[in-house]
Length: 414
Image (tube, rainbow, N blue to C red):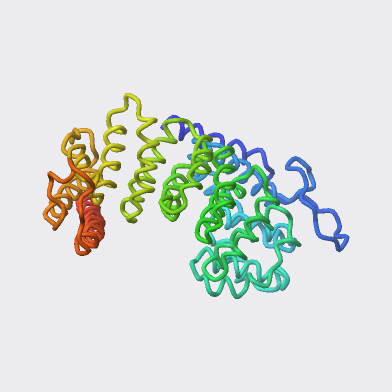
């Protein structure tokens, strides 16, 4: 609570230093206005207000929890201030664009509705498409937003607003054209380096690269993110999604790429690296990529040290990835039974029980007599060769079903 109080106080102090009425603007020269420094007196008040918010948000990208806590309070102050500005404020395109920027930065859309309601007597026809498109986007009307915003060129807007528009456009087109989305995200990173906008663009672009199977760019962008934004408030979410993205790479078929992943992960502190390997190993098991799961779990085991829960998880994932192997099933079962259940989370206990149950079924298949594991490589019939794969699929389905039931149960208890 102390951190929250300090953050709200900071937000209030930042805004209280900005005058309440708009300053006189310089006469228009007909050229595209260039964004000026925050402290230039001739900058309109709405622009100053939005820059104050963006400065705070840039600190969020660097990991400031106080800025993250204070953001909501600052947004509330700015929402009220914008709604109470006199109508003549909006005769300036710079002020209108500041309102759009505020809404795209997390502010309430009320100000955009108000501007549209006031009509052409207040807002110019040139600014109307930007307002309508931004409003449609924040209200979740993607098709309407796409229809309006697709015609707008972010390159002719001031850098920050241009980056915001490109970020929105990339989200709207990513399902139809990953290449276009990637191009727009490149633009955002060039326009707004070191900001929350760049952090968001880089975070999204990593997954666009993984979905298009551009592994080289995926590794490069992920390394850049982990090097520069690993302390971001959103880095935890990034690591979760990164673990999921890693499961799209079958290291059983592309083992040479694993060295690049290891190099990428070296940008993280050992504990974060270990957790990411564990998340990726678990996700790989659920995707049926047992070789990838084993490789990730092996790396996690190397980093576990004296951390018993992490060591147990790594051992669980190693064993679970080996139960469909005729050569490894006996050792895997022994490892599974030796695990200390008290240090495992509920979801991992579910996986453990599922793996043991499936191993028991696999062992009853033709050619899987237990004693054969001690002898030469067992002769497995064609039926037996296909059944372990089916068994693994059953294990994955059972694990996901039990996890889903567990999550529903937790929601009911809240």
